[in-house]
Length: 384
Ligand code: A3P
Image 1 (cartoon, rainbow, N blue to C red):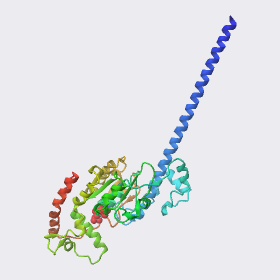
Image 2 (cartoon, rainbow, N blue to C red):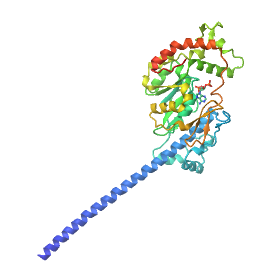
Image 3 (spheres, rainbow, N blue to C red):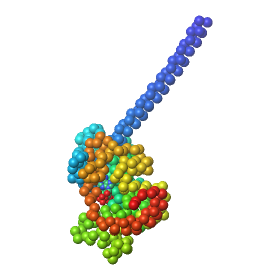
């Protein structure tokens, strides 16, 4: 009898032992898988954020080259000079840059071919070029460059450095050509392009629609009279013997008939062009930015743009300061306020004096078109 109890006990304890062993092995297995997963995810996040920094750095360099603007735009308070963009990136990125031979400061060579990307590619983070998701389509001389420079401070926005003019001048070259002009992005980043003449070019709405009917469209608009004077000022800066604004804006030298064939006047009839866009895109895909407010309160307008693009509000009032010498808002390229930057000399020019009667006549001319534009957009821009 003692023997049978002993055997029974042995059986029980070996079963318990087996169960304990199975539980232990299972626990070890799960803990190992969990840790491996956690480690991979941390590594991936770290690399993604560094690649993002790297791409942003490259974009800044391209942008600085494109605008070649910041030096000399202002003296005095917060003079804009591009001092070492590297200070805006994380130490980790800087160390990557230092330990490899890629000369970002001299323009990025083939980002794809660089050995340091091999590791990232293995992680599935291969940067690639995409057709734009968002376009700044106009309007010329309303603050389009300012808008682009401000929004591209966002780490999730990457933009072509210069105006590509694909939809109006190079359409026959095809979408492959266009894509090749786009910057490298990684997953989650928006590709943007700005060409202000798109807004007024007849064929463009349909062409953009054919590329991607979900394209988001940003349109900066400004009082059409000031816009016309700005447009004229730019043209006059390139041509020494340019006639006076008043001679060009009206037919027969009197202020009775406005010359609607003259580009600077014609472009200001915004409603006419908008109607064409609305044939292809719903209003919800268009965001109108006030050129006046972009100067008075850039953070407010950039906040709206970030919301519209579904981006976190990263660019805030901390990125802007008013440069009294330039008379315009300038920006800090990081929240650390380490790299002040103003737009170039070609942005924020002094306008010539224009006869007040000419201005009054032009205001009268634009009024019905402006009202139509307010009606179409549902926004009263309150232009005089
Ligand atoms: P002016 O140079 O006539 O003042 P665009 O970039 O579309 O060509 O627009 C140029 C206009 O942007 C400038 O016209 C200027 O008024 C306006 N602008 C808006 N914000 C600006 C900024 N922060 N710095 C310089 N110009 C700015």
